[in-house]
Length: 147
Image (cartoon, rainbow, N blue to C red; front, side, top):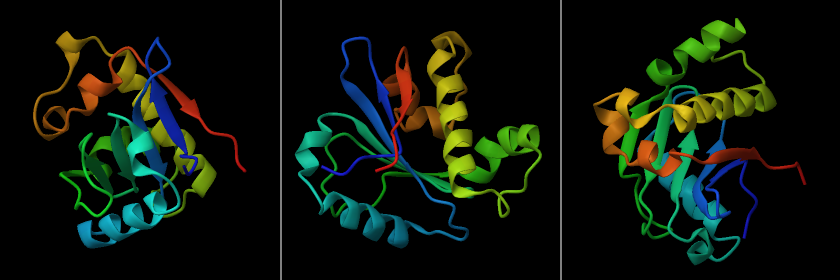
């Protein structure tokens, strides 16, 4: 199975979310679908278990459900521009100027903030509809070592 940029694991060590970060502007669902299919072709997609798959770019965040097949289109497409803006602002860098490693770190910070937010404070709307907040609740976000 390929190694992912970030994983979120619960207290029992179960992977609840896997995340890949790509600093690619102007992404679209067709590109995201093809990219995910290619990544998952390098291993057994069933080893994802029941975790969500997230592909984050500076302008879009794509989310696939737990049981999505390798060739499935993303079930949710969110505005990375809106969700990640506070993190880009805090880092003092424009989305089109961030280095890939720094973007991975920025996404990790966002996920850690979501994982530590009490359910009563979760935002409503498109992000809540993805199931990502539920999947991240109480998890620990882990950055994978570069191969």
